[in-house]
Length: 244
Image (tube, rainbow, N blue to C red; front, side, top):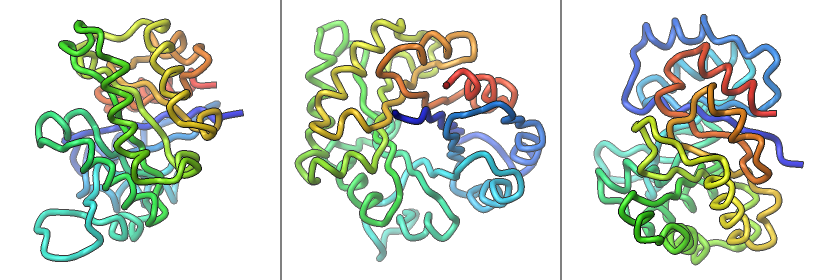
């Protein structure tokens, strides 16, 4: 039985004051899912302290370097994230792929760096609107997963999380229907070899409390990677409560 997981991706939003108010307003009573908060790098310590005080959630980061150390100005390594008690890290978010040119091969290297250091990578995969309209969704996702599979043993998938985020649905207010999302999640699970039944596969793409329940009711949707809605503590908590 897979435990549901809901992860908040604050992206480049927030401030010290925002984080203080967020955690004073966050009520996770009745939540049975795993909960992860992924703030911008400068607020990792603050969120780590909130996790110690409040409990109920784990700390994650939004990215990491594939390198362990060295002359890489502006980069953050897996060991640095571990210093702040991070347990998870997002790799291959569509914004990293599209805005910063991260290839599937680079994403795979980051996945391996995270996993080898003891972090749980949240691997993001998904298609653009153009790729969807050309009926290339499954081919695109298969290639993104294969780049990682080429570098790991199949059992390593069990120490990871996969998030399906259709690029056309991120921040647009559009959401794949539950049936559409389920079909892709089921396909992803088949691509993870024998590890598939044990891997948490999340949906990301304009998830809100209003649609979370219908998404989470699908057999292969184990939770969500939440963007904009995760900036509202009450809304985010309602999404978490829907994951049972």
